[in-house]
Image (tube, rainbow, N blue to C red; front, side, top):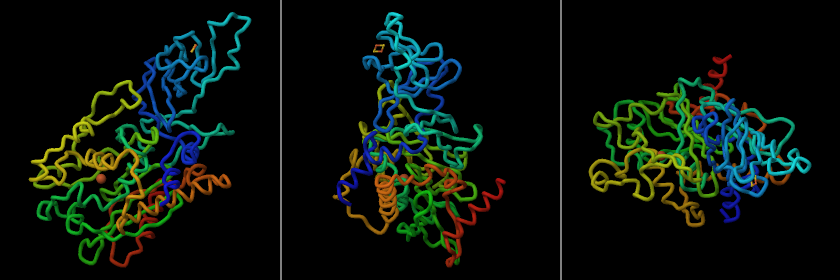
Length: 431
Ligand code: FES
Ligand SMILES: [Fe+2]
């Protein structure tokens, strides 16, 4: 792929084509729990912009450029007071919409606060997340995407975030690269160690699955299949959904509800959000009576700091080689690194902040990655040339009841029809 095209996909700043495309969508910006009523502002880096988020005493959320429109002092040092944020340089104050509401350093006859507006973005909350809309201010805001996991009730939902120090697409591609599962995560596992009927067992038996990849109204889908039970194939179905969502396989499709967002902070940093039904993650992936090294280990984090990149950092990170244990690597786990998420983190960050695609040699197992790049590029070209609205941006229903997961299907089954049937059944059940 020519370098220019890669650059188009990787860059997310306000003037970049991909940055403009992403600004057509609602974007998870932070966890709701990160800002408290009347609490301190939070530094948030999003699509290359440096923002602050704060919650007023009454619960309203402000998400705005951190530079005060007066003389560009950072509002991070501001005072969250009486339904607004006050800059501590000359005391100008802004409401959560960014409107200047007080200019105490100006003599009354010179006050021009109605004309001063900080760059502020619309927000809303769902699924334990604060979502932002950073697009052009149109007549009305789009609806939030109908992503099933984001509609779960609070007591059933599991949401967490983790900083990934590489480009958003590089991180995302790790999530749609199914063939690494049999190596990076369970490369040392043997058949006799896996529980009968577990997804691990099929992956161990055949580490080089065949693939089918399809374009869909919401993005792309792959089905990776390998021999399953007698007369059946075992399928792992997963999706890319515009603009930065993935739904990975793991557990059976009937019960799995999962969505993951690869939200670009800037071109080289990504905030990963995981949203799922509590307890619907991979199960029975156990070897010798314990969790396979990596698939379900608790993720340890460093304490959050106020740095632009200080939120949700892993304790196992690049600075300590992800706490790799060479002895464990030679005796029990393929990587010697504990935790599937950490293993993914290690491998995608090891490719550099933005890997150089001209050095790649892609194989048949990379079909999903190739097709997804093309799918995004096509949407980008259409959006750029005639303003075609990208998939899902104006039609949140394209995501409705889309699920990933594993399936056991007869050898001659039409996998696309099978997953469409499941989706239709889920849609009917809801009505
Ligand atoms: S720079 Fe903020 S009030 Fe002057
Ligand atoms: Fe992985």
